[in-house]
Image (cartoon, rainbow, N blue to C red; front, top):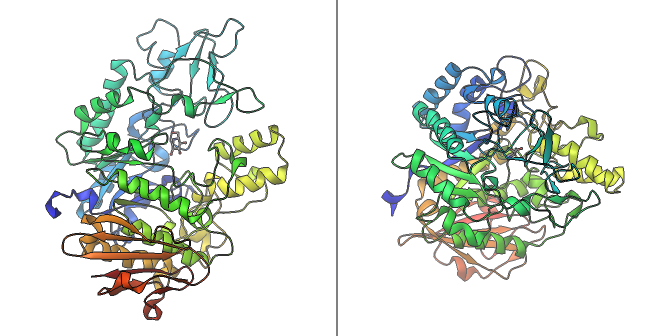
Length: 553
Ligand code: NOJ
């Protein structure tokens, strides 16, 4: 089995949010040289691949997810020479760079869109999704974009509407046009030729559009969320097989698709032997606390058994010949300690439980910057403090729908994307060592105590726990090669499973409750303690509140 695993199955991927990682030129915004400067820090976390959020030329309407040139670096992040240096310096340390391909849409400032929107009869007139108005002049359908408001915007020059799944500054490309697909594949090839190690495919489930018709309104604005109508529609895999054959086959790059809208049951056709990607981000576990992901007021309670079932489904559906992308945070989500644990829980212990799952479930861990420090959500009192466009729009939507300001801010505190986007706290000094200038977004106020330098000195820190687990994961093949079997399924406090090869078994037990929990010690008979958050105080058959432990036999 060992030789069959690919390099990206044996490593840890770290997602870097370009704006917020490390600023070396004093403009308050992170840059490529800042990433190069911190490669050794990442190496110590067992990181073998770095997913950079978009750093291509962009007007930044959605912080880089609105690309105006797929083959140029945005000046704000540095130059192509900086990128070449990063790729090379990373390669010298055994780290590959992973690019974020934003292929569902471009910026409205991309030359393709400028041409397409200039008239109805230019060479690129059908590179985007253009439709006539309804007879009354209104938008072609009543779809609400993911960031709020109609998903259609009127273009005077064409006398038509164009579709945008996200902001009006992010028009959707027309993948049905083979010339569009070719141009996108060429852009990906540009980065393959540069020597990158893989791609994350942004919003990829939206590329195939269904029939254009109204859906039943789901809120007072008379609109209907676009996601359920356009995500993962039949035929989408044909486009992605074409992408794979054109760009990936014969390379050692990996792909991970952002696959909101793909269920666990569908994973085999996305990531199985004949799948289109090596891995996908499947969202069920991170949406566990929302009834309707488009509505932050639909927060719902959940129990450990719900999370267990979701993780079991995705582990089992990738068991035969697929591979899972393990993630509990990214730049679009709250910090995991606040997301998955109550305020009463000791937050460092909570962070260590998630860390344990990250490093021991079957799949490749995708760590998000700052998660290794156990960072928390920020709580800013006023909506004007928030930079993220989706947060501001969501707040406005909640107010329009009749929620009080307090309720709307409560939802913002719980779900805003800015919580994960605050600058990396490197040390306790000025601006947390992130910049010599003014950070583009305030640093989390707990940075004097919670920062990388402080945690490096503290053997009990979340950072040291991550490093220890990363070392264990790379030392013992069972964590990468082993199968997954859940145990104690009915236990209301403990989430536990066994990773098993023919030579070894690792038993992972995590206590999600703030009370002591017990289990039958026969489960770990003959196994030795490998690591526990309680150290030598660990007791067989018992877990301290929020303890995580691994046994090996
Ligand atoms: C998903 C990205 O992760 C998010 O940050 C972005 O706003 C949308 N796709 C649109 O590209």
